[in-house]
Length: 235
Image 1 (cartoon, rainbow, N blue to C red):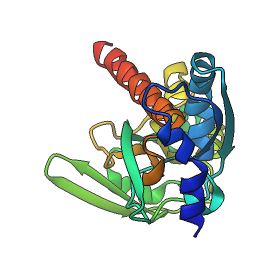
Image 2 (cartoon, one colour):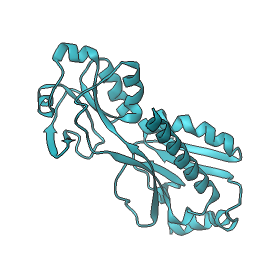
Image 3 (cartoon, helix red, strand yellow):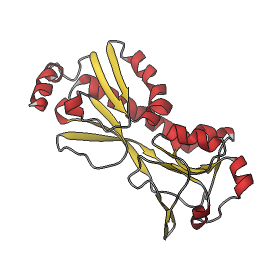
Image 4 (spheres, helix red, strand yellow):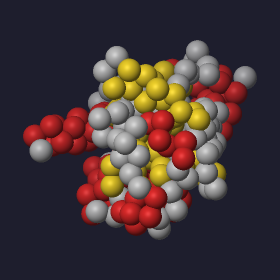
C-alpha cells in the first residue's frame, strides 16, 4: 500500500516526460561519514544547476527503508538490495586503507605483516559486517586477522580523529582517510596488501526511475565521480 501511494504521488513526474525540469522536494539518504566528507561538497553544485529543487537530506548510518521513509534516493555501500522493487546505479569504488599516525608508529613500531596487527591496538568500526575480522589480500595470498583494541566506534570520522591523535591503527574508507594522508597526519600501513573494494551505489524505488529529479541527481553524481576518477588516473 505504501508503494502504491508513493507511486501515485510521483506519477505526475513520470508523466511529465524526459524533458521536464527537475523541481519539487528531493529526499536523499546517505551514510553519515560519506555524507559529511564527500556528498556535502557536491550537493551545492547540484543545487546551483537545479535551483527549483528543494533538497531534503538526511545523513544517518541507519539503512533507510526508501518506501516507508519516503526517500527518493539513498546512497549506500556494497550489499544486496533488500527489496526487489529497488534499483541501483554504481557511482564510485570505495577503497579501505590501513592507517596510523607517525606518533603511534614511533611508540609501537610499524607492522610489517598482517599477522603483526594482533599485537597492536586496532580501532574498530562497529557498523562493518564483521567488525573485528580484517581480510587482506596480496596476489594469491589471503590472510584473515582477528583484531582488537580499546575503541569501538560506529563512525569513521571519529575513528579517523582517534587515529590522528595516536590512539591506534585503523581501517578507513578513502573518502575519510584521503585528506589526513595527503596532509601527513596519517600514514599508510602495509601498502602491498589490500582489503577488498566495495562500491557506493545510488539506490532508488523502481517506480521513480523516470522522475526527472531522480534522474538528474543520479546523472549528476555519475558524471561527478567519472570526472574525479579521470583526474585521479592522470595524477
